[in-house]
Length: 213
Length: 213
Image 1: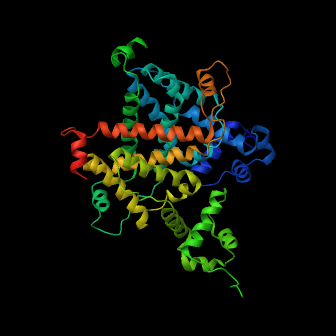
Image 2: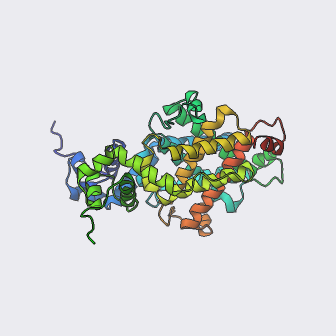
Image 3: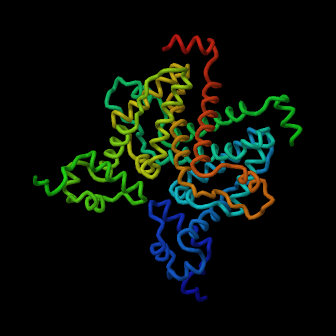
């Protein structure tokens, strides 16, 4: 059976190819992307609006791939952790891509749904309305910073002195992915403790959490 | 008086020129850097060891420029905030540079001193030894994520529906630098609350803090 001489192009194919190139350390440039896809530049521009359009296409692909809209099933802390874990997996699987996504307004419905669902959890926790967006931004910035930390070299600190406190602490510290995972877990716990401390304590927490579910 | 035909090259000059290029959105490449400095490639290689050497030179310049080693003068929380503010200013003034620094082992004495001094503050707060390095990594990752957030567009979210909760929250939310600064402050408060919650409560905090100073 005859196969088409060039693959059928789509926003999704463009997004996937761009993600692959950037994950591999490449830059975001349309010409090499067209070459990679085996199509002409004008074919790409038929589907996406330039460089920024490629970024939107990448975000669409990633938002669909990561199950970001996890159903609520536990306490607000458990729900928040489950949603953040999913966001963090997205970020830490594709840290270089995220650096590009950062600069472009989020307008993809699936991505917006993720942030809406994080807000829902914070509302159920009793976070005051005026604090909701800043709290989401803190969680997002931390997840992003923790994910980028995964690009760190295996040896992060190399003190000259063998007597320094840092040298001794590093000896007993995990490295690589284990270190990165530990910092993400601990940081999220810290932030959740801080969010909890900022919730107005007018009713016992358990009662409020239940009444809002 | 005759001026030298080419400026005297140094690691510092190379570092400063590289920082300027990357801050302006350029890539980290030696050839354009040599052109910018008006010197030959071999002159640069005489001072720094390739691309990674330029990264070390940039870190030396930035570590010297930001007064990272602030004398302790208050409670551990105040001291920690003062040191973190300095780190955050460094990161948020040069977010693109930081993305490059991230991948290269820290061996610059001044930068190591900053981390050592952060560890000192956490020790004085009573953070258990096994938690020191992870706590530093959490603080660092958050400061980095918050600084990169400054590269966000003026409009971060653009929901399609005017009725969505996100749309309403955005209306009353600060934008740009004010938004970014607010998220940094709040996130640092959250993390400090989390650190405090993890400190073993065997003695009253104030007594322990004093006895360790």
